[in-house]
Length: 426
Image (cartoon, rainbow, N blue to C red):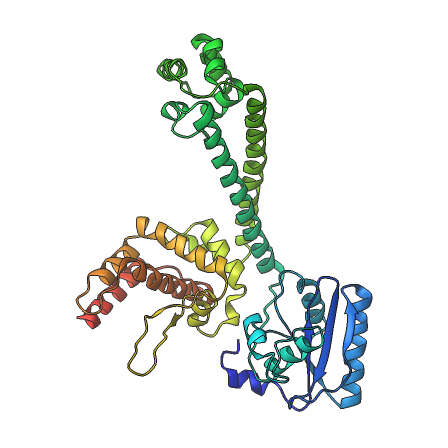
């Protein structure tokens, strides 16, 4: 995995054809240049279809043959999801892929003509010049199990968002129609609470049903015994409820629709997590990540899905930068700016590691000791947020060692590292 701009520039040789592509939903535009920035062919306009991709292949082959080029590197902006199919095609053809930052394109587009003009002819050249100068990021398209895990993590995130939306809407419904319900049932997602909402969701329905029929309904559906005190509390709550009563027919139907959606998404969520577990077992050494207290299925799957094959990294600091946890500073002259993390990179990886660290600090004594040491040390103590970010970097290094070196997590070694760091700090 190339890291420096010099290494990237060295990949652009005399025999390299640099192609800049402006990505669109239906139509793409491409221009080709040599390593000095001299244009080698006319602008190509091609469609986002199999025929268009074939047209691009023929255009690049013809240009390479005419200009004596042996390899192609294609650059483009990551415009949403529109580049996925073209990127897969170019990758399968064996071409090098380079992504340029849209912000860089915006800043450098005026270099040639001193004009803020943006069009389909100008952008491909700007992109190609950035690639020529090594100002790009190499594209990694995960394959096989790593792509499966990445898609699974993204789908789980989507389902989780839907469940959160439904949860909030049900809570809103209860706040309006039956606010006392949450005093009887702490969570509306429990079996008995869900059954109650399906059969007698409003105070009027509860009072109409009566305590005996409520108990009978609960016992037929819920295996564990539900005490009569719960039913009495429900009757009492319904008797003194301040919930709104008008428009109850449509709103009851709305609640049943929400509960049906909840059942659907909840079942999909459980099936997907089972699939994630099966996929994770296929990744070498991945199961060992679960040996760390506080690290669960979702954390391990997110890390592997977002990073891909661990062997493509030469150092765990590359993963830290990929997640946006690398430190940046804005200083000039006598002014020393505040050091922060870059927040650039894969957002899902960064968020997953941060949330995992919150759980780890609750369950893992080694990381908890590290956290305590970070915030209480005499020299350069960190605040709690800084410590958590630092521990995310530590977690990345632990994951990297386990996955790349086929070792088990060793709590004793972690504690030894803590003692060494404390001596150094002292």
